[in-house]
Length: 264
Image 1 (cartoon, rainbow, N blue to C red):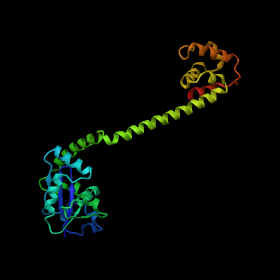
Image 2: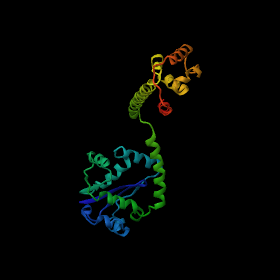
Image 3: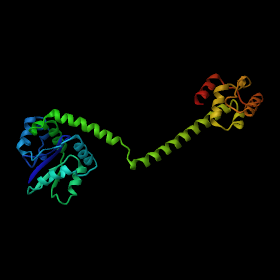
Image 4: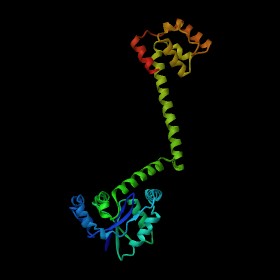
C-alpha cells in the first residue's frame, strides 16, 4: 500500500509519497523531521508524485477559500485522480474537514490516515518545501504566502448574510443590558441624594434631568441661587426651589456629595 502525505501550501499542492508506509508509527519522527537531509530520505524528490503550482494569486485564493469551507476544489480533485490510479492508497491530510470531504467523494477509493505525528510531518514539509520540491524556490513561496494571506484576510472580514441576523440580535440585547445598567445607576443616585433632598424625586421623573440638577445644584441650600432654566421648564424649577425651602432631608458632607455627583 502506498502512503501519500498531501501537502497543501499557498504555492500549490504536493502529494509526497513516503518511503516507509509505517511513517507515522516512528517514535523518533519528530527529531528526524528537524533535519532537511533526513526529510529528503523520508520524502525523496523522486517520490513527489506531482507538485501542482497555482498559476495565479486568484487561483490560489479560490482553492484556499474552498478548502477553508471543507470542500474539495477543482485542482485538488484532479490531483487525487492521479493518486487513485495506484492499487491501494493511503492519504494523510492536515485538515480533518478536508479529509472528511475527500472520504465522502464516492469516486475516490482512498483511505485516510492520521496519527500523533501527523502535524509534525506537515510542519517539516512546509519548513523544507524547497528542498523536497525541485524547481520551487523559497522566495516564490514567500511572495505567494504574503499575497494569499492578504486576500484571505479581506475575504474573512466581508459580511456574510448568515451572520447579519445574530449581529442584530446581539446589538438589541446589548442595548437592553445598557438600559438596565443605566436604570440601576439612576435608582442609586435618587436613593443617595434622596437622603439630602427627597422632594426632588417627587417633582422630577426624568432621570437625566435629575442627574443634571444634582451636578448643577449640589447642596440643596444652593438651589435658590442656581439658574436651572437650561435644564428644567420654568414651573418645575419654581417647584424645586420652593421644595428646598421646606425640605425634610438630612444634612450630608461634601465628601458624600462628591460621590453622588460621580455616580450622576
